[in-house]
Amino acid sequence: MNTVAQLLEAKPSGNTYTVSPSTTVYDALKLMSDKNIGALIVTDGEKVAGIFSERDYARKIILMGKSSRETEVQEIMTGNVFSIKSSQSIGECMSVMTDKHIRHLPVIDDGKLTGVISIGDVVKAIISEQEDTIHHLEDYITGKR
Image (cartoon, rainbow, N blue to C red):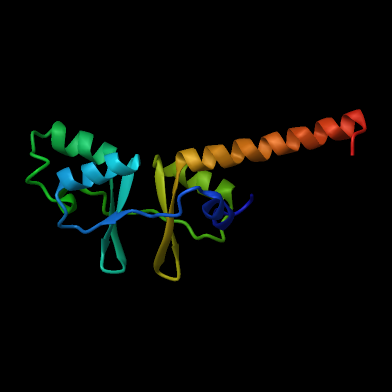
């Protein structure tokens, strides 16, 4: 698995969960809880408008004394969204996540949202690749083919 496209194909759930900018923070959190995910892509029609994560909630609702039932996602979402293309490598994906200190990265091809990659997805893919390499090297060293 070398590309983001291959990682997306291998993910057990191909669903990408989105909310509109006017969704309440409470409803967004409920969806995140129901789906056991840490972030949602905020879309305005077909366009990615931002990303809403647990980190946004912790830093911009709880610590600022706002109400999650009254606040809309657009008020606290991260608007400057970094993204990656499905043709890019897992290494490039990890690089962007590390450099930008982000845990979720939308995959956008030809202006369209095609998926979301989490840091957990990337780490899992890298570990799997390393395990495969180790097994091949062990087989080579021991003469198994």
